[in-house]
Length: 186
Image 1 (cartoon, rainbow, N blue to C red):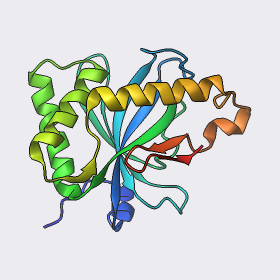
Image 2: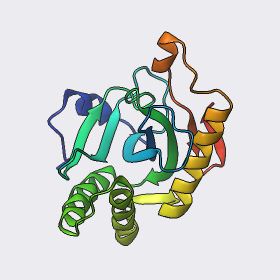
Image 3: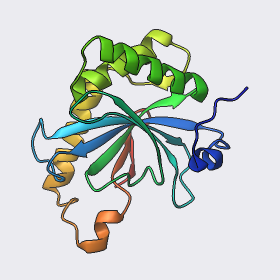
């Protein structure tokens, strides 16, 4: 029996045929310019993003008191104002298994006292690596993907990508496919 979430968005999203796992990059100050200005989330969404909005799901360490927040996202290309980029880090082989692993991994991280964004993402990636079945082609090395993400966003900021005018803040955020080695959304 297929796992379902109590979400109307999931009903629409469950028909995707190929999924990707993204590292969502968020700026504490909305426009990060230096290392350490970032926090992270894992986002699951479709490979093909031709419709608008592009629905998906976000898993994030949330709030002052640690807990995992699992939420449906109306458009993964623009999750919220503090989102600055997305990095494709894995092809999802079994989305039901991945959702279950993230939930169980969140419990493990909570009991291991993993309370930082970085610690939480690292614990979740290790859970996925340990499983070895929920993703196919992947780059899950925490240090490598977060270093790349920071450099990518800092370079985008220096190039003026985050100097928005009103509605531009609501456009899709820069997206880089780490597996293919190419930018999907500049």
